[in-house]
Amino acid sequence: MLWTIILRFTMADINQEGKNAKEGLLLWCQRKTAPYEEVDVRDFTYSWTDGLAFCALIHRHRPDLLDYDKLDFSDRHGNTALAFNIAEKHLGIPKLLDVEDVCDISKPDEKSVMTYVAEYFHAFSALDKVETAGRRVAMFAEVIASIWHMEHDYERRVFEWIDAIRSVQQEWKNTKLSDSYVEIKQKYADFSGYKSTEKRTWVSEKRDLDSLLGNVQTKLKTYNLKPYYPPEGYALRDLDTVWEDLLQDEAAYHRNINGKIRQIKENLRKAYATAANHFQRQLDALSSELASLDGDLNQQLNRLEAIKRGVGTLSSSLRSIEALDQECIDANTEENDYTVYSLEDLTFGLRLVQQAIQKKSAFIQNQIVSRNMTNLTPAQLEEFEQAFRHFDKDYSNTLSPPELNAALASLGVLYDDQQFESLFKRIAEGHDEASFEQFIRYMLDVTEDKSTPDQLTDSFRIIAGEKPYVTELDLKMCLVPIPVIDYLKHEMPHAVEGDRGLDYNSYVKQMFN
Image 1 (cartoon, rainbow, N blue to C red):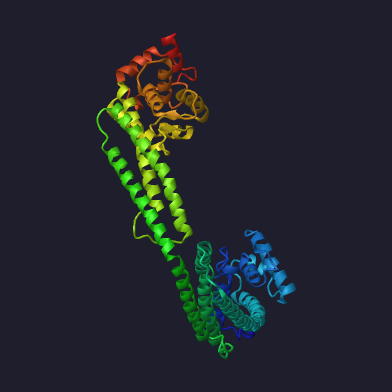
Image 2: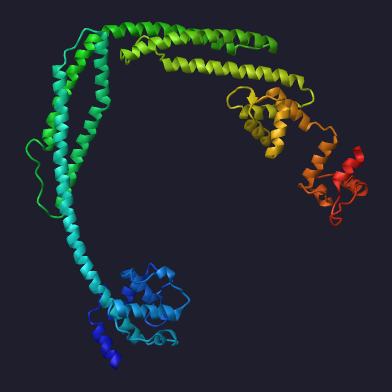
């Protein structure tokens, strides 16, 4: 009866989302302990027996009082006692329950637990109200300060924006254009720099100012505050007027500069176009000659050398075109109606022809090498050549150590670093890179069945999976015919290790020595 009276008095003002006192208190506990995976509050009896729910409520509201992560989740009595002591000492919540009342009873008394938990609700609710009030005052002050700073930032930036524009306009009006091409050219360069830097900065700033003023008004309206009216000359319509004046002065200044240098630019265009068009015609002729190569491989190599010499001559003439192009750049010629070929086009076209010559030369040389490799099938040659070309990234018709290692790996030939280092020196014959012929000769050596001791030992080791002995199962897995397996079992000595297999190392030495 006493607990009933206390409970009714304690929970009289508990109401969560229209629930009755018990349901409201339970809902409050569930929400506050939701972030804690170990806590599952379903009632006011069993859910509190491990003490973690009490600890979670304290940690959720006052993390400075309790380090939840350091709790021993299996220590039911310790957790409960810790929560009770902290609640009494720091929160003013009396110990209405003993630890044994919660932890050592099969089902704690529901009313007692509800009464005690309600004390937590009242203690933390009061704390929440104070914090909420403080938060509201702080938030309002922050909003007012933020709006004040935004307004002053807008006015400062508008002043600086208008002042910068007026300064440039005055500079244009004071400029006297000279008849000197060098001076006019510098004026044009300065004007182009202005368009790509200062003007773009002003465009961006104007848009930012539009957005900033809109944000100020929106924020004021959001908090039901009176609107902001910019000082005279600082409104958006004033900014638009300043911008229109700038565009008119800019266009006039641009026309004055263009009138001075138009004829000089025209002459430079014609000179560049004549050289560029002639260069492209010569490049097209060489490209056509390269595409028509056929017949005897050695004759193709001879013709290819002649084409290389022609390309070398073109490379020299390209330097003259580069000089003309630089003059056009210096004169700010942005278009040329007399040619469609830019310096980049010509350079790219020349590079393509040079690469085509390099690839064609490598192909012909490789074909000559392949023609002499009579011990390889056409399919093998094609496979090896494809692997070589794939890893010859610079089209040098040679492979560096990493490229050669990758090419061999793609063909199923694998070595560790120490083995490969020694192998590369042998393949490349002391050079820094291995040629196609050296690569093919090595692949011929790898694929050709020579029945040498090393080759036979390597074959047994591969079948054995790197074991020092080979088993009957290993041989069957590699599809060795049954009669051959029976023969090897009869002829090969057994391994020392438990007589589990056949000692292929001893067998090979026995057969070849």
